[in-house]
Image (cartoon, rainbow, N blue to C red; front, side, top):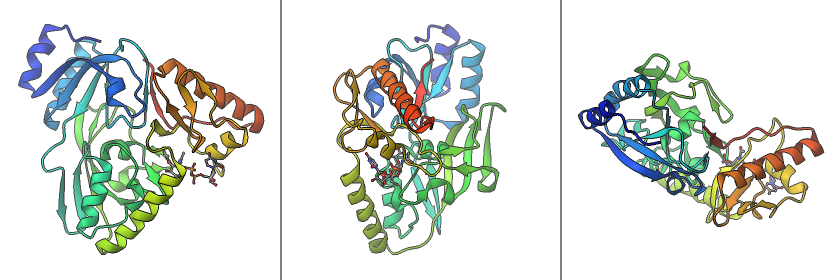
Length: 302
Ligand code: EPU
């Protein structure tokens, strides 16, 4: 979608928002899939309420883009614009055991930075791609660690109230790959309370997780991580594997040979290919196990 509206175009520079025309979201997502749209880069959190008021008033649909690492975007000219935060300065500020982190900061870099300052807890998240805001929104987790466990406070734009609020950790519920934030809330910054631990000890844990990940996940390939959530008490990857579906494909969208819950783009997969593969695998698992797998990947299909 292209922003043609004069009022919006005039207001953007005043709000410190940069307009990038016709950006390919395939280039901004780890799956390498997605059509084109205008991208609005936001530099000041304080500009968000006014920006969104303006977009709504002019009936311009919009979606928030984080790191694009857990996202499947439809093909072609997209019927919405994308909004993205530009990293604030400093990205991470430490005070005692509290790390104040910008939502646009890279999650892996944040884990490493905190570790170097003898703050542990989040080592398991080291190889999870994406931003801190994205991890927070869906309570990303790996190797027994979930980011939600360390959240002391979140600065968030609450779309329903049209304002920026500070929520305390206790006001937010963090469950398996799910939080109580509304889908259109926008994470802005977070205060994490992390346990003190000597750097070498944290590093040892990080190395073990990295090794496990390297041996069990297709890290060099284009993917969005796990496609499905694990059903209660089960493993989506194991079920798909047991059905002999590794290597199964629709066009260039293929079930990874290394981990069956990772679907990779082996070349020029379209969103339609990936959606067809997801639907097909879900159907086969449903037939065989009577379990309906729920998407973990976020789908932008309109
Ligand atoms: N398994 C198979 N075949 C496969 C894949 C897995 O038999 O192709 C078996 C494994 O042998 C193991 C079990 O399934 O016995 C679970 O596999 P794994 O340890 O790889 O964990 P997972 O449940 O598949 C979860 C998260 C990952 C996270 C890892 C490590 C979900 C949906 N996935 O995977 O997160 O990295 O644990 O903690 O919760 C993600 O969220 O995108 C993601 C990749």
